[in-house]
Amino acid sequence: MSDTRILIIGANGQLGSVLTVALKEKFGADNVIASDLFKKDDFEGQFEIIDATDIEVIQKTVDQYNITQIYHLAAILSANGEKNPLRTWEINMKTLFNVFEVARLSGVEKVFYPSSIAVFGDNAPQDETSQTAYLDPATVYGISKAAGENWAQYYYMRYGLDVRSVRYPGVIGYQSLPGGGTTDYAVDIYHKAVLGEEFSCFLNEDEVLPMIFMEDAIRATLELMDAPKEAIKVRTSYNLAGTSFSPAEIVASIRKIYPDFKVKYEPDFRQDIAAKWPRTIDDSAARQDWNWKPEYDLDAMTATMIEKLKEQYNVQ
Ligand code: AKB
Image 1 (tube, helix red, strand yellow):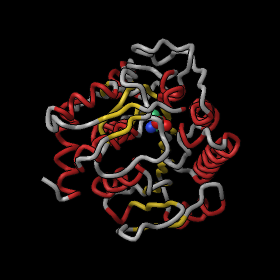
Image 2 (cartoon, rainbow, N blue to C red):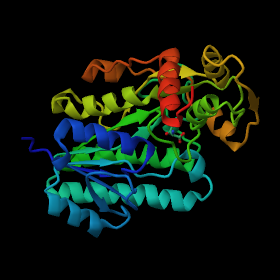
Image 3 (cartoon, rainbow, N blue to C red):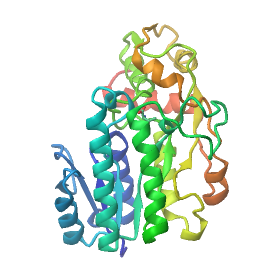
Image 4 (cartoon, protein in one colour):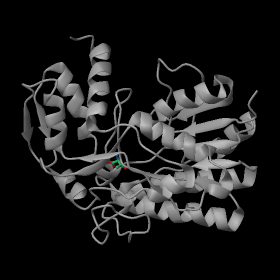
């Protein structure tokens, strides 16, 4: 029996919902407590309603279930965050401090905190962006993630709290929908292709961004959290790469299966966000320290996305 008792904050989200399933498989459903602002009707397992801006409710849940690990996935993402910058800052930072404070005061063993490629801005090289490239994010989401990474390192150095983090690229999966990011187009496009609908893309056709398939993103998270403490040399957040591509390249990949798939380009404010982000990521520190290696390239991802979405929509 596992002594690990996990609390997931933001379990309804794109990543959180899939990570919850993976953690239940790994540690047993009895040892995983999912939480979010509301419980989805079809959720099975242990669930608590947690508004992570309320430290008391996090503390109560950690005490009640003797939590040893917290995965803090709740955040307002890059595109949605720009609609109300101060509120985004308030929510992203308050929830982070609440989790870190409860964790350190309650002796929680490990915390997972997701960062993002959004931490990079104009002054980082856009190709093979290195682990230590300059951080001057241009969105409030990116600013909150860059600050959060530094707070993660601070809590580790000052209090010995074992916070671990990766800078996720855009995550692409069939299991769940993203909510309010700049990379969301790369999920929506597969849904439209499978449903036989035209896709309107909010990025330019040649805007290359780093992306990762959900299976790889989940495996990276579990592998990082499993790594021995002494192997974790980066205490801010690890660069993580899957595969990079532009809208034109994902369209070409989809057209290998659906040759008549129609796309129009209608770039909006999200194009300006994307234009400041890296095109490709150097993740050699993650490869070196905890043996990270992605498995899915664009065509492998396309094949799986289309196969799984066809099943979900029950179409041929
Ligand atoms: C977003 O687009 O905001 C997120 C991210 C890259 O962190 N998917």
